[in-house]
Every structure is written in structure tokens, then in C-alpha cells.
Length: 393
Image 1 (spheres, rainbow, N blue to C red):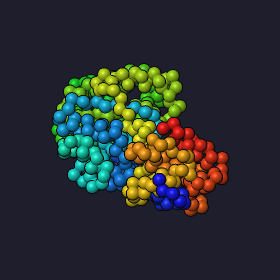
Image 2: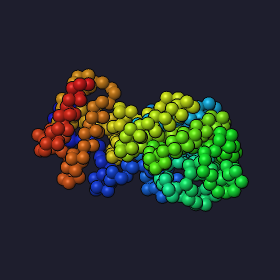
Image 3: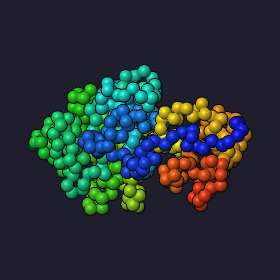
């Protein structure tokens, strides 16, 4: 411990400029797989360097990346993976991670996050794949969705299997599924043998094939509400898709079924999710949790703090511990442990919106972080929560 004046947290680590200026909005945290595919996403998601610089490779994301890479390289039988958690759990961010890892691995940026993914793969070269995305929150139940083919041609299509075929091989994909060999849509879900032929075509042309499904329940809920019989059609589609993927070497399907919109989690939504989830679990394994509660602080740390200042936190360990004394007295175990628990609490302290606003308005840290009495009820509540946490540990 270092005696003397308590050092505020904002003198140990620095907030990113976009946080201090208020440019960072909640919308920036809303990852969108469709925009990434169409090239219209903000650089923080569309540019691999910016994306991976701010990405924390949580244990679940690393494990998934390893499994998918081995499958696409032809070294694994795990063809179907399902993500768990609802809004804010990192599922869409995880799908975007998979997109960037395999879209053009030769041009991946030289940043720590990418190095961690490579290390998790144990020396395996990250395989390049043709990537199909089905972001169901963008699939209108009447008009469909605009999607781009491998040749760069855009087209509006209504059926999920049509969008799959279009992204795999353009007109040739649609013709493969159509009874008359036309580059048009069909109304029913293609049987497993046709689906397998389509997936094999994607592997042949792309070297490997990665299918990313997001927000399935968003579309399914609205479609089934409009046409109740469509639940069986969707079940057939996913059944044929997962079975075909399992039988197609170097093909992998990663799916996020749950919806961000909590209103879709009504009895109808839960029934749909349960029945679709059973299909994926038959061909895959247990659900994957991208980010655990213990890793949430690290995720936010990378997004909200200047990474260069974070590199110096370990060197500032005595000041970090001292600063925390102004929030709540650490117990002896936390103070002498090497797990960095005291750093985690310090870095999580300014995440509370009121404390961040206090910082951005005045340019100073919250009074509580400087060892003085808190000046607002929210600060007192937050500090009390933090104090209780450290005592429990």
C-alpha cells in the first residue's frame, strides 16, 4: 500500500476521447451483421483493424473460433454451433468476429486480439471461407431482404433458402434449387439432398463455407403470427440445413436463435425458440456462451478506455489500490491477491452513466473516487454497491 494522497481513477487510466466528448452512443454498441455483410456498417464493426482493436477475445468466443476454424479446415466433425444469451450477451459481436476471421484471413490486422485467436487455434492457419449471413431481423416477412451475391450483384429475395443460395452462387444457386432450373425462388424448403448439393457448391467455389444465422426468432415470430403453418416450414428448413451441413466437409453453421426484442419472448416466441433450438442441438452440442459475467468488465474496459493507458495500470498497481480505498476498503485477500481484482473494480467504477457524465462535464473524477464524500445519490448507491462487492470477495 502507498500512503499519502489518494489518486483518483482518472489519473490512473484515461477514458477514450469519444466517451469524454459524448460521441460514443448506445447505438455504437448495437452490432449489425447485415451492415457488415453489405459494407455499410460503421468502421468500428466493418474495418477489421478497428473491430479487433476493441474486441476482447473472451473464453467462449476463442473456443468457438477454434472449433469453427478446425471445421472449416476439414479437421473437425463439429458442423453446427448454437449461441446462447439474449440482448447484450455478445452473440452478434461473436458472429461478426467469425465473419472477419474467415472473410480474408491473409489481411487480418496485427493486433493483440487476433494474436490471441491464432494462439487458441494452436498454430492452425485460419482458413478462408465463403461466408453466408442470414440476419433474420432484416428479413421482412412480405418483401424479403436485399442481399449481395459473390459477384457483387444485389437482389431482393423473400425466402431464407433463396438468400442462402444467392450468397453461395448467385443465379446458379437459385437454379440448383428450382424445379425448372430457373434463377427464381421456390416456395417450399429444399430437401436435404438439394441443400447438401448447394452447400457442396459453396465449398467447391470458396474452399470452405461458413453460414451465420442471427436473430432467427425475430423473423420466425412475425412469420408464424402471420401464417401459423410456417413454423413447420421453418423447422424443415433448419432441419435440412443442419443435416446437410453435418454431411458437407468444410462447412459450418453458427446460429443465434434468440431475439434482441424482449417482446418476442412471449409464449409463442418461447415455443418457437424451443422447437428450433432442439433441431440445432440434435446436430450440434451444448449452447455456447460468448461472454461470461466475469468477462463483461474486460469487454467494457476495452471499449471505454484508452488502451495505452490501460497498459500502464499494472505499473500503477499501488496507486490503483490506494484509489480504491476512497471507494471502499478492500479486504486483505483482495489486496494481496495477484488476480487483479482491485484493478477490475477500479476500471468498472466509471461505467455507471451518472459517474461518466460527472467526469465528462467537469473534467474531474467523481468526488467519491477521490476519497471525498459522494455528492449525489447515484454515486452513493454505486459506491455502496462496489463496497459491498469487495467485502463479499
